[in-house]
Length: 524
Image 1 (cartoon, one colour):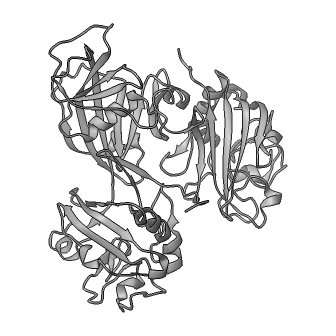
Image 2: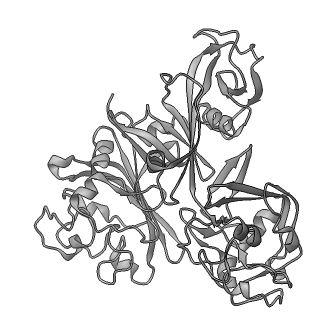
Image 3: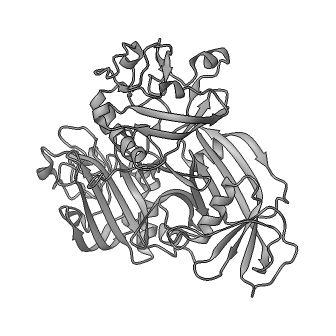
């Protein structure tokens, strides 16, 4: 599909990379959509979504494709289904479905849809006449013998979100979706010779230049027989060796491989909108494996959330540091100061790691907050968020730092602004935007107008300007010189979410992301 750029969620599992085509967690996105909407897709990878039939067709039409479905129930049980072959045909055939080779630990509820066409509330392409299509798009068959589907209303009646309707009623286990977090710690156990391989079950090389320190623990988490790994500095790109036993012939610091072993693993289930750190702190523990002495610790933690592997680098205080270990964008845990860990989104780009300061895409998080809330941060890297002015100041004040702002508009265009250096002062100087240089990009240079100004919010106006805009969202307000900011209300007619107010009257700003890089050494 030449020329199409789509933001997707990728799940890395068992050596494969899966593109998520449907995600449902809490019912906040309406799936009762038109045929055209199901064709083009809707929702967001950060919330709930349908990728779009035209993209599913593209993904499955030119190579052998596998469909995997993961289901979580209200009784905390988790099941999965896999189909060894899926193909969704061209739109002229109404996204006709070929599907077979079922495997899994629950019912096969899709093989009977082989040869069926896709329908929605405004178009029954297969002429099935099934009333369930009025509640969510799906491939339909003429017997209409189901009252649930993965696109039906989350708490609907008589048609509801579900997989195997009859068994879910009988077991009193409602299909839900939750965040699962697996925290896996590894301990460094010493060195081993590269020619010592009795403990090795598999030797792998990272793809596309991924750093070994991120790659090895990630693949070990997904390999059931893996109890540890070796990181071997051998030519040309290094090797990761998965192991299932202790090292019997240890080497020394001059040998080629460092050996790590699992020391404990905790699996928790959490609310769908939980951050990783909130899940670790408040989640319900489902399983604990801890066979090693508790005094063994490591700064490297592998976290799996919703199938996406993340890492914790407690020796890093910024995403710039994380980028020296991995080039994979995602949510990571870092040590933002000598006494505080923080879960952040890192965007890896052009050899740098950017830490996301602001994220907005649907207006679900209220940005009309107090000065204190803007200082400490709010929201979640999995939804919408403000990192916190105290962290922004720390990241930009101690190192040469750049800032990048990415903007997406209602006509699907993407724009950006970059500044090669930025400094935000500390709390004693009211988080003043004191330095901003090196503008580039294809969007207007709007941030320069706030250079030299302190940060304000509805409960604290440091410039004493008495501007209405200050009462709608925290920002570096330049005494009423703008009616829109990136923290203004998402749909307000007078003080709207926006970047360049005058040019956005017909082409509305839909999403924004502020990122900073640098700040590699905040505390030592």
